[in-house]
Amino acid sequence: MTVLGIDIGSRTIAIAILNDKGELLAGQVADSGPSPLERAREMAGNLSSFRRVVATGYGRHGARADFATDLITEIKAHALGASHLFPSCRTVLDIGGQDSKVIRLDEQGRVVDFIMNDRCAAGTGKFLEIMAQGLGLPLEEMVAAASASDGGVTLNSMCTVFAESEVVSLLAAGQPVGAVARAVLNSICDRAQNLLLRLGIEPPVVFTGGVAAIPGLPVYFARRMGLPDLLVPTRPQLVGALGAALYGIKVNKATG
Image (tube, rainbow, N blue to C red; front, side, top):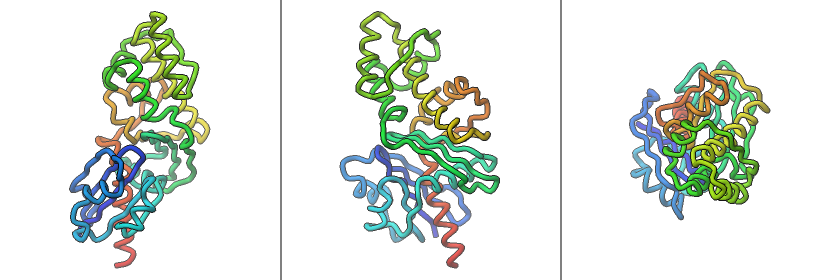
């Protein structure tokens, strides 16, 4: 009998289906849309085919009231998922659509401490998307342009509205697109690094979330942060859902 983990986030929904050995049978990520719970049920399919359905993320309580059998916090879910993929993991950096978090783990993969920024979009995927629109570049091209630039420009505001205006002003003043793109990435990277430093960086660090899925960005972050051992899952957006499903397997074993 399989277990379903479902991560209902502010921007996307991710599902992971595991067998009782913890092997990933299927994984999917889709936009949350205007009705996240309805979208989640659609993605889950035949709920009766799962031994357990474990929800995490912003919508976990709604899912529990509607269709999920169990729930787990985002922090614990990401810790389980990251340590499953990388047993040596001691720190998780997760940057999603509208929040970012850093989680410290012990040698057994248990949560020691965490810090979270969920009150401001600055430094998140939403911030990055808005800045890319201001630059007129797709996200992947934005990273490539920033990587090819020598810099020389600094983004002073981290407020999304003011930062967007600053990007427009810099471009209007004749600053190269690549230099402005580099300033944007640097501001996001530095904000993430500040979270890491506040909690204490203990390598290896695993980078998860939608921002980690942008081609070229993890390498850019690793170089700027001086973290040669920044580890990135093949599918960074599935880590929370994976952790939720792993929790379901644990509950199954505990209850027989």
